[in-house]
Length: 324
Image (cartoon, rainbow, N blue to C red; front, side, top):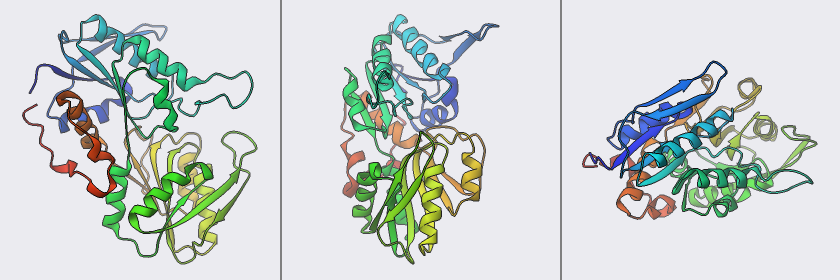
């Protein structure tokens, strides 16, 4: 175990951080959080960080305190003379605010990128950014890994007959098309109209889904309104079964109730965000070995390009970090 590598976690991502650290054969750095009576908090490290590469794991889903805690921990590591500070953000929240789509609004994703950099982050590791251009918001290196590294082997193992990959909207067409190409499956596309955020007006399916096992692919499921409406529509068009895959299970509002009542047989997701409750329909694939592999690449300055190559997937289940 290298004394030059330290892995720490914010409170919001403690469970997945412990799994990532274990996959890397490390223990999490002890962090104490002093909480004042008014809700103000102050994290502090209980170990020496001088000269170390410090990986701080925290997804930035609401409440905003999760982002603030990550910023505090980055600043604390910088003031403790860490050699490099790497923010590991499995779910980069506020990513849907990636452009000025109407007058007088903030580009929140750019603001958060600036905050992380100013706080002292030397590198960012994240997964499936909602918009690829967010990488350009940073003035430090960004490793944006893809959950397809987990999803595609899972689908191949299940070996569904008459498989059809579907996108719930036109924005996700490229992701669904790449999955379909790799698996040699058909493709369907949803066309939706939103009267307002988190509300789906109408939805039509482009493509033949009759008698097929359909898997709807998306990066984020929030209220599950779109995904459930797409599933119900696809099922009504004669699909044999309907499943969904999403990278980040935000699952707010009535999402769990919507999923339970929908035509979905299964929702396959990751543990980038901890689930608020369990559901028989939800299958969780862990990102622990994937992120341990990326951390190893940063520490050893080795390539992680195999994680992006669909045709030459590295077997991350058999990577040994015992000498780290």
